[in-house]
Image (cartoon, rainbow over all chains, first blue to last red; front, side):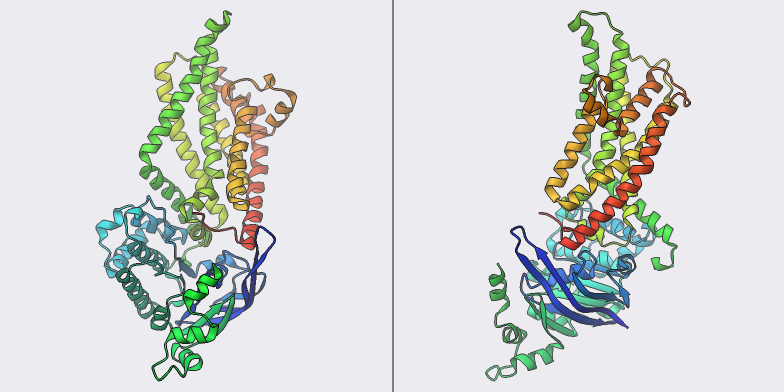
Length: 263
Length: 279
């Protein structure tokens, strides 16, 4: 069974002046059980809308979204129980401590404090998060630490599908490495399938089994990183092709150029 | 840890407690602001009660000052409680949006009924704590006429009114879902209209006819009428029935109506992509 399957998903938004923005243009993709699929794309390519559609926050105009065979549009509550999400914004109550936010997050999924506390201690210890700091307000923590807490919050509910929407964007290099190591550990130790949206080429290549390139709401390609590089950037002047080469060959832009184009 | 094994009702009850506990944590974190707000509304209630003390001197007419002061104080306290209920519920969405947690909360499997029930329950607990402190402070300063008071009767009226006002608040909560800024502005206007037409500081019959017509659909009108009858005249539960039955009907209408309206608003927000954080 596929962990996630999207077939011909369409989503457009109306802007104030009547302009229609096509955020998802006939998107089809699948994530197999235990697989990490990355979606690589510049800002405004539709990655976040894709994650919002899967996480039931946005209803698609057309197409189907299934999570472990359950229709996410018709049965959102069933689907929500099996997944969790980490987004680019940490989405916490800033005045509350990490512990208070984690206890709240756990309860929304029916996990009591008594059940959650030992698990929180274990997860925080695994990611090298000092338990003393778990009592500090979130606003006192660095962005890197906040993202670690966000990943811990997602893990706490034992999701079988994890949606990671640019979890390392805006982090300093060390925090980025820590968060990526944590994602790697989730992949190795937990039976989770992961959809990772990013515009970081190295991150997509290192963490994902397959990588899709997204541009203007379309998924242009979805293959293993090596196949992707071979197919799109086979002849790169004698040097080994990179994901950047593959992205440029597939879209005609670098990520930075494509993001600037959108702005 | 696997919550799939828990019965659905238990999962939802854990989530209700989650909302109550989260709001308690937030109240603790904003403790100084809570104190400041409590001082402000207590001072406000006292200032309004002092109006009663000054009327005889200003008008030169003999009046029952203690009765008038008690009338005003009851209005100030009851309004304080009911407006907390309305505000907490109506700000459910805008608060989450401001904190940046709206997407996380709305993608969780806890049902919307659970969400709003948790918010309503916290509002009731918070409102009761607030009104108890205010009442304690105000009685230290004034010689109020509560010799005939039927406190249980007043509590009964407030309990029934709480249900209908939670429903009223849920209807208002949908507004920021449809339009983030304008929606919240409209809910503040609704709150001020409730204050104006419901007879908080004066009998409803002094209002123009069209305002009296609006007052008939405000649960606050009946709550004030019932509470005053219980506290000032010692009305029994049977005598309070005339204010209780309209509140029961309003509760039976507003709660399901609020939940339905919220469901429709949430579906609209999910179709149009409005269910996201601001700032």
